[in-house]
Length: 411
Image (cartoon, rainbow, N blue to C red; front, side, top):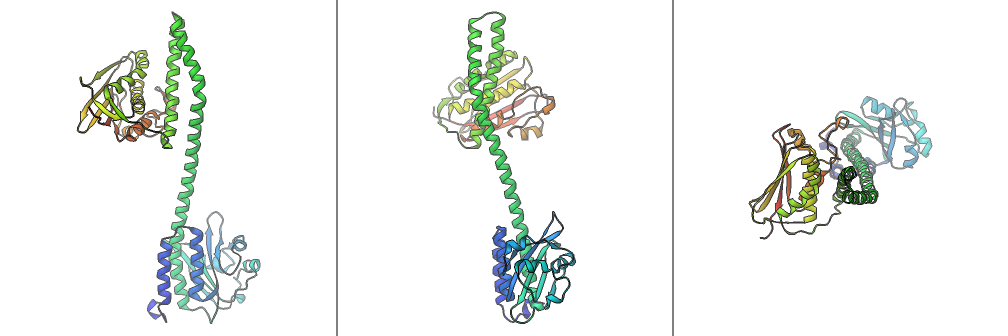
């Protein structure tokens, strides 16, 4: 059967319109309703139905239907054996019956549920990539009997519908997956914010008492207080990281940029990690211009980013290692670097190092600690100010260099 043998071109125009609409609609319920309404209109029949295959259970179900209560029909499983729709689904062949009641394959349960008596029937398989996903039915031709022309029209509708239904299902699955990820991400953010909030008060008390003991006592008490203070300060840095990560992901951070010498930023970052470096007997050297080199950034956020980078250098460098911090003008910007002689990184690790919670070590054999969020936060804080941040390493055991490009300020 070809379109050239149709008595008029109205069905062809309507099919073209249907194709355009189906390709621009991803709402599954709206698609199904459009399909059955168009089928009933073009075939001049009393009702039309879409039955889809339930992959969890081996039967068909009414996904949409005109001329009856669709909710009641949806409750009726249609068997693959002993039903007209099941026969079409199994054989992949269209079926025309102009006296349904005499056919033993007529599934009467569905008709009885909605009190609808079919007299004539036309059904075609719905295929997607050679796989039958359901059946499209037309019931009770208003005038005369179903013909080959009707079968052709319904087959064209079914072909377009199968593609559109598959696309809508894929989009629905993607949306559901996204919602699950979004929900899990929100739970993570809520936990991080709550945990960081609850840890602040006890940490403040610990730091206060440890500082007091360190200054007022001598000998072993002072040394022990120093260790407690160092551990508490490290934990406070983790708490700040948790808070910053949550705010970064929620776009909740505010920035107040101003001109400031990059030398001042690096020295403030160094003060944050000085105690940790001293404990590991590490030496920190500076390679800075003699004249102030201004950058236009938020000092607090930038120092926080630099501190995270320096923490990383101290953590992954051996006892007695050398850490270099420097800065130079770079075209219209300022380039800043922190170089260590630590464990180094593979090319694969360089690609992943800025991912939140990424750990280069196995969780079961960790030596260096940390949550794996410091570098992610540092990059977020720098990029939010129009800067850039990346890592370089010659390989494992050969150290690493973290570089930052910052907007240049006014002299």
